[in-house]
Structure formats: structure tokens, C-alpha cells
Length: 395
Ligand SMILES: NC(=O)c1ccc[n+]([C@@H]2O[C@H](COP(=O)([O-])OP(=O)(O)OC[C@H]3O[C@@H](n4cnc5c(N)ncnc54)[C@H](O)[C@@H]3O)[C@@H](O)[C@H]2O)c1
Image 1 (spheres, rainbow, N blue to C red):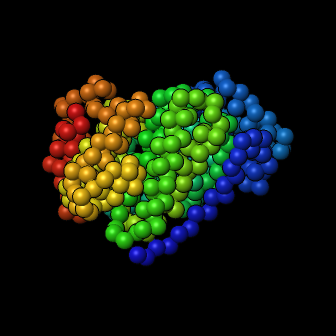
Image 2 (tube, rainbow, N blue to C red):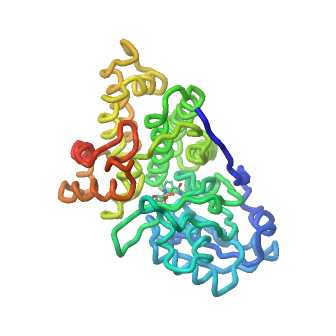
Image 3 (tube, rainbow, N blue to C red):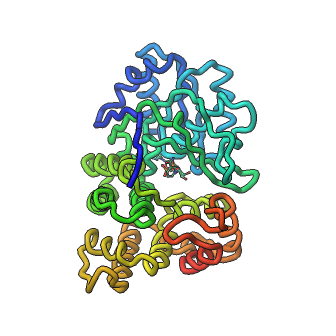
């Protein structure tokens, strides 16, 4: 195992910390573009509290509202124009993963001559990796993506029906302000999707990574067990601050590079989901809840021991030996049952999606990311036919 780890994001965690937003933003700029989503932060009063804190610190506020779930390239262009026109020198993202991702893309687009879509990964070569971005302060209002403490941003291009990501060191937020009180109003379904999203982030590296990563395995299992314990509590009672706090930190940790450091795994489930949601604009984690168990049943046959470990350590299931496929599949069944129990869909038919475009999703997925031999990276690498088989099993 070899790795290098560097995460420059400063984390401020705790109920009530939103009041410190101005103080934490001020060292990074004086003219803030506050980026928000569909309006929940206005209805809940969060926007007013955030902008008051910024104003009290002497920061002038400009606004880019209306970032949609699965944020669109057109919104990135609109936000970059507002930032440029007003000489903004810092960006504050106040919202879910969509708002934070759009904010990262806006932060880089301000310095990019040309179409921001150039900066999105479309396979190798990738000549326009961003090297400069406005400083970003991330204030998540939803526990899910971990975008607040990583360097990635997922953007949809509504004109080309593509969804892919940009990733660059300059996109790490300078500060992640994690105030679990901001998540108390998240509706049940979005809370459940957040739980599914964070679990899927760690299952990707857990199942696709290299062998002999015992500490990373335990971290991943710890994140999953925390989500299994506190997720249902937060869903049953949205006002349970303790449960909200545990889920929020689990979500941040799940994708800040710490759990999966050195594992070198691919993200096949995410990559397939991105292609499906480019066509159907479904909630990201709803797509993950459908694809992940189907992918696990496919991958377990190639690497049963890892799935047996999952069944034993996460669900306490017995096994006859390290390669006991029946035990591995029983663990996957339990995982799928958990997703169902919190209200996630586990079949495409529940979202009204049929098989008409299955070959297209598979082709688009390997077009965006492949190992040079036409396969989607992961354990095992997946051919287009494998992707079709997994998606068919999830219909
Ligand atoms: N950058 C990353 O590391 C990363 C990782 C995973 C997923 N993603 C991407 O992030 C996006 C999904 O983000 P998300 O799951 O955080 O959801 P989201 O940001 O799309 O928000 C989902 C819904 O919840 C609402 N919402 C947010 N906060 C709320 C609150 N406090 N109260 C009430 N409603 C609230 C939003 O308005 C929206 O309607 C997808 O595009 C996905 O591909 C990014």
C-alpha cells in the first residue's frame, strides 16, 4: 500500500456554529457570492441568518439562487457571470451537494476562459483540470455527499445529456462549516437518500479497493454501522439533533479521502448512476440504492471473501468460511432490506424507468471512464455487457 494524503479543508463542527460564518469567511474575502438551491434556506430562515453573520463581519453579499438538484452547466455559467460582474472574491455555498458542487464549478469557472464544461472529466486526455478557483466556504444543509470536504464536483450538461465530474486541488473548500442544526428540516426522503449516499461512498472503496487494507476496512465498517444506527433515528424523528450530528459527520468522513486512502478503488456504481441520472434527472442516491445491491450481487461472485466480511462484520451473519457465497449474498440481501426499510427504491420500475436505454447507459458510462480496454474500472472491471446485466437485474 502506498499513498499520499492531504486535505486542506478546515472543519468547524457543532450545533450553532452557523453564527460564526462571517468570522470564518472574512479572512478569505470581502465580497461573497452566496449560492443557494431551490428555496428551502429562504423558507427556514437560514439564508437570513447566514447573510446577517456575513454582513456583521463587514462582507458584502451577492446571491446566486436556484441551483437545481443535479446542478446544471447553465447554472454554473450564470453563477460565474454574477461573481465576475460583481468582483466577488469568495463563494459561500449554503445548501446540499448540488449547491456545493455548483459552487465549486463556479469558483473555477470565474478564472476559466471558455466553456466551463471543458473542465469536466470526459476521459483521458483531460487538458483543462482547474488550477485556480475562488476560495469556497461550504455550509451543507443536508448530510449526504461529503462535497464539503473534498475536491470533486458533479455537473450535468442538459444540452448533451451528460453528467460527469471535475476534480482539482483548488476546489477543496477552505472551510467546511458543519452545523447539524441546519439539517433538522431535511424531509424524510432526502434524509434517507443522504444515508444511502454516504454508505455507497464507502462501499465503493471497500469492495473495489486493493486487498490488505484492514484499518480502512474498519473505518468503512464504522461509517456504515453509524449510518445503520443513526440513519433510521434521524428519519423517524427529524428533530433528533444527536442522530443528525452523527449522520452529518459520517457523511463528511465517508468521502473526504480518509476512509479510502490507499485503497485505489474505482467508483463503478457512481459512474453508472451518473449516466442513468443524466437521462432521467433522478435523485442521485435513489439511483445508487437501486444499482448498488445489483452491482454487489455481480461483484460478490468475483470476490466473495470481501462480501463475507461485510456480512459478518456489518450484519453479524454467520459464514461457513471466507469464500461462502451464500453468506455473502445474505449480507447483500440484508443491506438491500435496510435500504427498503428507510424508504429508498431498490428497483428501476419504482421510478418508472424501463429497459429502453440500458445499452445507452452502458455505452455512455464506459465512454466517460474506462481502463483503456473498454472496461469500467472496478473489481472486477466491467464490460458494457456486464453493466447491462447489472442494470437488467435492477429493473
Ligand atoms: N462532490 C461530491 O463529492 C459528490 C458526491 C456525491 C454526490 N454528488 C452530487 O451531489 C448531488 C446531490 O446532492 P445532495 O444529495 O446533497 O442533494 P441536493 O443538494 O440535490 O438536495 C436535494 C434536495 O434537498 C433539498 N434540501 C437541501 N437542504 C435542505 C434542508 N436543510 N431542508 C429541506 N430541504 C433541503 C434541496 O433543495 C433539494 O431539493 C448530485 O448531483 C450528486 O451527483 C457529489
